[in-house]
Image (cartoon, rainbow, N blue to C red):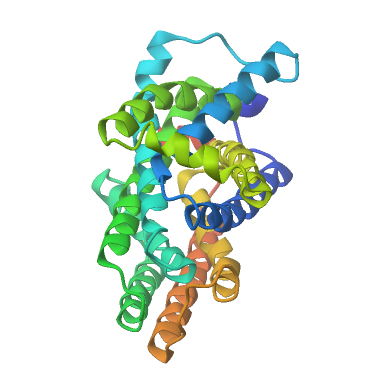
Amino acid sequence: MRAMGLEAGEPSSFLSLSSAFSYGVASMAMVFVNKAVIMQYVHSMTLLTLQQLATALFIHFGQVLGMSKRKDLSIATAKKLLPVSIFYNANVAFALASLKGVNIPMYIAIKRLTPLAVLVSGFLRGKGKPSTQVSLSVVCTALGVLVAALGDFSFDLYGYSMALISVFFQTMYLILVEKSGADDGLSSMELMFYNSILSIPFLFFIIVATGEFPHSLSVLSEKTASASFSVILLISLVMGIVLNYTMFWCTIVNSALTTTIVGVLKGVGSTTLGFVVLGGVKVHALNVTGLVINTFGGVWYSYAKYTQKKKLPRRVAPDEELHPHK
């Protein structure tokens, strides 16, 4: 049985499109919401802990009120999903840390390197050599990041490093989510719940060990006296739930690669908005040129993967293609 109540086989075009579009919108909005919060509240790990706590409580009370259904918690399943949770939280933690020093257009440009990481990972796992168009588009994307970085007046080595590490962890968790959802028949809601429950103890240990807690809570208490910050924080917590759900949904219904492509395409709009929303961007011809090259590479990559998929014969169900030896 497929996740989301689907039977094994190809998901409907409407379902595939809906999941991809939902993830794209949520992902684009979340970048700006997190940036707005981080600009006023620097304790990113505490913010991530609150987002995971809000997700767990939302799903739990949703089940209590009969609004959602999920299977009972399984220790065996939790052990299998522990790596997913670790990579997910590492990705978000490093992404939030990078937003402290990287403007939104450059952050998105760096995150567009995820397809390169996915392709390299696929090659190492025996998925074969990518096509010439895919390879060239990925090189174009990477070249764009390099050119844009050379023209970035606000270059921050720490921020760039955090974003690049985030790319690695994002690649790992997308691959693991795709495999976990297909193997175990878990719904997006169930994956979210396991991810949150497994994350909270790990994150709490981190914020205590680093000394962020309890100072971060006293700062948060002071900040919430401001109505505008309270609204932004609430939106951040809600969007954390929405983004988690749509990301897991898109990856299970489609694939890790589809989720990556959607992330690239939504970045076109995010890059444009990033120059005018929230500030922090000093325009330089080299920086803009690099971002244009990077965006072109991202769109080219998405087109190349789309045409490549259209040419493939539809012999077996997606799960069978992913796991031919089962």
